[in-house]
Image (tube, rainbow, N blue to C red; front, side):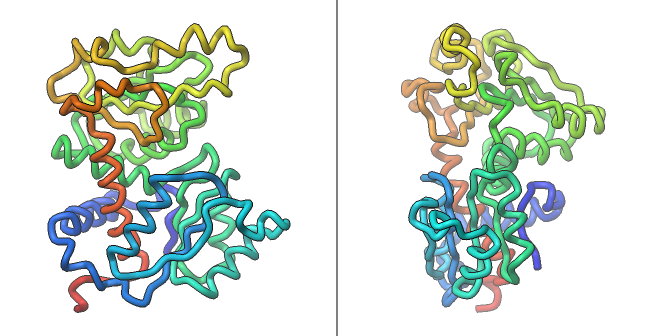
Length: 308
């Protein structure tokens, strides 16, 4: 039984296949409208989500399948103390595939040990978010035409941002990528990423505190929110928060073909004026998430448009 728990569960060949399928789905949606007829996706979301949950549901519906599930732990038997294993076992009686988001790291992996249907990790704590990673990879490939030979800056909360961690791990298998980490000292990438990814693979990276000093170098900037609740004191947050707001002034020295990505939701870390700039990719990125999740659902269920 195949699951997707960690982005490293997928080989480079797997990723290429999924991205190619996602591209075909976006170009020829009519081919795929019935491939998941009579199949059911269960969305088990133990914490809030907009894009991930709705894109999974839209993906399954556009494949001709149906959806069941819940959007918060309060509306499930978890509120009564039911274990992850029991929830997964029960839902597996009703569905063909599960997408699970959970605040505890490793929860989707635990669930996958007790079921005989595929489980997709839709985000577990500060750990992984593999379908967002596929979304990001598809976006980069569509915007740049490649997944190698570029400079990417990750900006904001790099310590707790699971989307950042997942994307760094996935990109580490591609050639000639320059990594620049833009964050306050308090929110730098975790030591395990430095040791297990960059140092172990001999991949150089830089850490800086101001985006302005590296903006002219970037082909891609991946924005995340600086989270107020992560700071030890209010003074540090106030001192640093405005340094990580991307506005038109900070884009003055950026490349004309810069790609601005953000996993969303946005709070104030990207000015709304940037939305009109053709370099802003984040809403295209959200649409890409539906296409790549359609491809993943098909892949894990073993269905094909060719079968029709």
